[in-house]
Length: 152
Image (cartoon, rainbow, N blue to C red; front, side, top):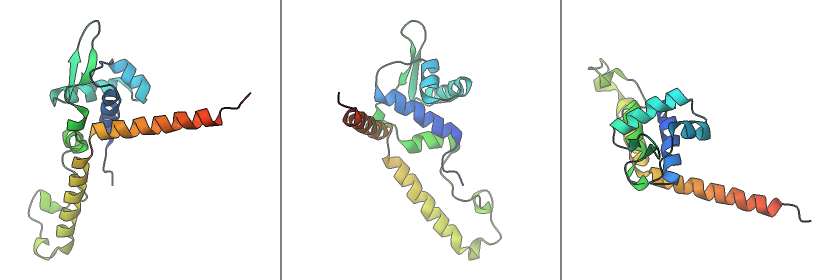
């Protein structure tokens, strides 16, 4: 079971990179190289993020893509919904049509409860929070390198 598919993963990575410097436009090529995302794949993802209103685009000199909303306003659940629809733990038939075991399925209600919990948790996580977490990780890594630097 995959909670995040490749589209959602790459979209979140691009959004976090943009969220590290809100208001700064970056080229798709620069994002592709920095994030290790295939360029053509990233372009399609960015087009969908632009259509969804999460990213804005400007062509020409000084152009590129930037967040269209504040990083703290972009929820992980928004991105998952764009690329995957709602999080689903099971592909039970009850989603599309009546299941013959619907009346006796004790697992169905638990699956629905778990899906709601997962969706609620993803709604609490924003691009701004993830960008802040990344800043702290990068700062800790930088501090560790300074401490390990040989004296001499």
